[in-house]
Image (cartoon, rainbow, N blue to C red):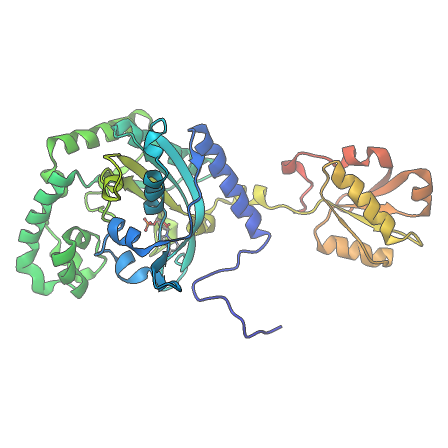
Length: 427
Ligand code: AMP
């Protein structure tokens, strides 16, 4: 089959059985985040462009070149959300969440859009699972959030991920550091890449993130932000690290980690995997104590993270993937002259008792019905012939064991009902 209609570049169709894996990951997120009393928020996919310009920052790559921005029919500039933190902060202010009991703990799961060059692990529509904690400035809040993230990844079976943490300090620390950085890089300006020369004016901290080999060379001996920290910022960071130590959460301090977005303050972190190649970041996050105020709310501190769900699923440990993969356990088939409508009636009985099943709706030979059952990966075939119909029973054939037995029709639901993880998935 060929068609002139194609997916938009950088987007994907997620198909079964892979979608079952996505669902299982999302259920795990709901379960783990729920244990920390996080509740789900769903914000619109479109927002006023100004929201992202104001919060993510004009000089960032996201706002500068990656947004899907368009005018609606009334000429208002709208943007498909490139990330979800700004929308959550907007929703916090707009819905008066400042009057709710604090802190407010929210999580989200959904698509984000960035006009980036597609490659493995990088899409134009991708998905994030994230959490935001608003209204708690304490270093222990940072620790608890990281523990929750770590617990989620461990429940998925991840073991060898690396947690990188750093602090970008408070505004005073950053102002002090920015000046030192500019003083250090200005004499080296001509040797910097074009992007970095531009950032020297707009957003010098981002130069630390540069992957450009020439830039990396020029950065040898660069002053470290830790040396510019205010006493308060230093103390916040020390308490976060002490908390992580106390809970045995392994991390690496990476003094060059600054993260791409403007709204961060204090703790920033990333989780990376050696198995991801160039696009190695799996999770990004940090504290953003000034964001809500920048959007017109009060002085409400915040911290959060976003997990790249597409990358997470690419890397998912096999055991979790296997458990999530579902196969239809049973199919109802008529034999001989019995009308397929009888099979449908039985299938409906089974579904009423919670059993998942297929039904053969066309009259076929037994041989071709069994072949179809096999192609669907079905393990149990429920045969309904004249004798069975008259006797109020069925013949249950287990394709894997190659055995069959008679089961009273009234007991069939019970016999086939098993917990989801023991559904007789064929391997
Ligand atoms: P960020 O909002 O840029 O910190 O991104 C957080 C996480 O989202 C990253 O660590 C990635 O795992 C994921 N991510 C960001 N951009 C993309 C993209 N274009 N395609 C797939 N995943 C992405």
